[in-house]
Length: 257
Image 1 (spheres, rainbow, N blue to C red):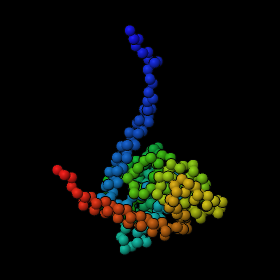
Image 2: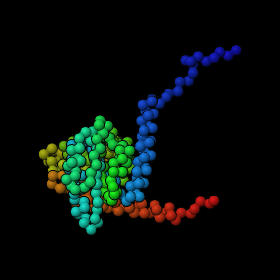
Image 3: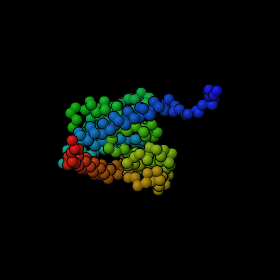
Image 4: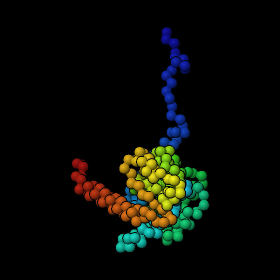
């Protein structure tokens, strides 16, 4: 007669910690909604960028200049710009951005260190009518939390200032590896900070080879012209890609019934 196996003799299978299971489920739900948002933005012809950085990098200053100068630089395009800005508390950044004349929505996360797709969806629904060509999302200042959270953007823009040191990309490779371009801000302070420009650029390329880098100053306006030209070019490329996808879908053979 065979003895029943004792509990200690059973194969112990590792179980995924519940906190990880919950987080994975939340991220999956966020990604699903982000895909829906991306389709909605494409349908509305809205080009969306998600700006990520640490606090104090100069995000708001550079975004204010972008909101103000982009329509001015291309008057024939009649470009319409808007912004959604996230902070733990206060609407101070939204107040600053409204000086540009653009419509701005503020999200206060009350302790949450990143924005999520459902927050963007709620705020986007308040834009009526949705006559926007560029939507800029200023994420909560953090170089860790926003990394995994897709907001339905077309591009992710990373920023770090010369006052933060050249090794910032090496310390936070996860975030910078997800970026499509990086703004190296407060470049007017580089000499005073003894900032090693070549080292910073090498570090960025080590994490994200070939990434587009802009050296900019919100104070002097250095780099603004190239930045605005690049944004326009990226939107045109995005529009062409959407048009190509739609043409391919309309000409594909129908499934046999």
